[in-house]
Image 1 (tube, rainbow, N blue to C red):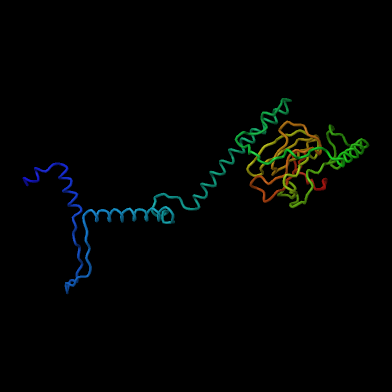
Image 2 (cartoon, rainbow, N blue to C red; image 1 turned 120 degrees about the vertical axis):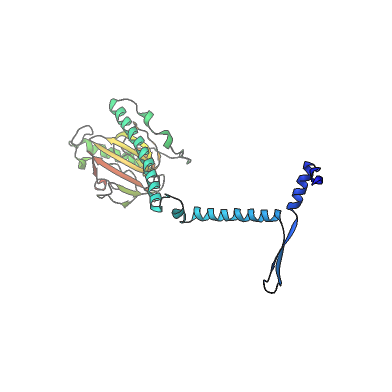
Length: 296
């Protein structure tokens, strides 16, 4: 005991470390015959490392089982079931979508109020947070009216001049007397119906979308479901809507002529399976089957 008291702190730590590393033999023998079966040479240090390693391994296994298997529903108190979690996620998506749609609705009301008051609505052309950058190069696109279009315009103007029932600024014009410029030439993939208030026309991506009548751009924006959308107000309470475009060429408040390029055909939005135009025609707040008046 006297010798131990004379040891320095460094020597005491060395002695304790030596005891930890001191080897012991663990032997397993047959109880009846005392025959030697197996033996292990261990130290307190080795036993501690083995126990710590096994404990960490068991903790990791238990964590993985709880985190990635359905057993967590029975172990964790008040843990929501799968259907409840899916409903929570779905409700969160609906809330985000509703908030976004409210912003678009507020923007539309601002545009309508600005147009009706005769002011410039260009500052409400788009919401900055939803503008999607376009990387395509459209510099080489030609928007000039072709000779064939010019000839057709002259023929239409001559026929309209002889038609006493037609006047773009006169209310009560019969729709049968109007000429609608085809928004795009292609193949109709989905017809107008009671549950589908428009006509889907499949054509080459980035084909030019044309305005069907003279009018004022009412809305030029982007939505989650229908992508890039442009809406035009025409005379006699007509509204035309063009959805799923890849790029919009006009802004809210712009004046457009019949046949003028207003957008490029695309495949934007969640409610689309390929490049096409979803075209809607509304008259006095009611959907109109454009296929009765337009040859696509």
